[in-house]
Image (cartoon, rainbow, N blue to C red; front, side, top):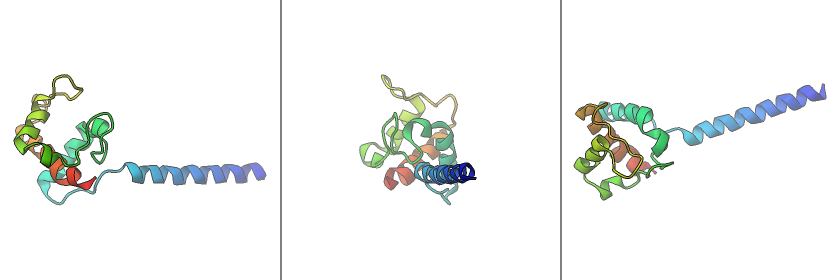
Length: 115
C-alpha cells in the first residue's frame, strides 16, 4: 500500500515538472497577422532548434533587438545565404522569398521584441 502511494506521488511530481517545463519552453502565441503566423510556423520547423522556442538563443544568437542590429534586407540575406564560418545554413534553396520574408518579420516583430 505504501509503495503505491509513493509511486502515485512520484508520478504526480513528474507530471507537474513536465507541465512546468512545457510552459518554460513554449514560444509565443500564434500571431493574428497571417504573414507572421506563417513565419512562426517556418521558425518552429527550421530555426528553433538552434535559436530557441522564443528566440532566446541556444546554440545560435538570440533575436532580442535584432531590428536594431541589422536591416530587414540584411536579415533576409542571412536567412537566404547563411553565414560563413558559423552553423547558420542557407535557406534560399528550400524557402521561397515570401517564406524568408515571413520568418524574418516573425523574428524581428514577435520574438525580437519579446525576450
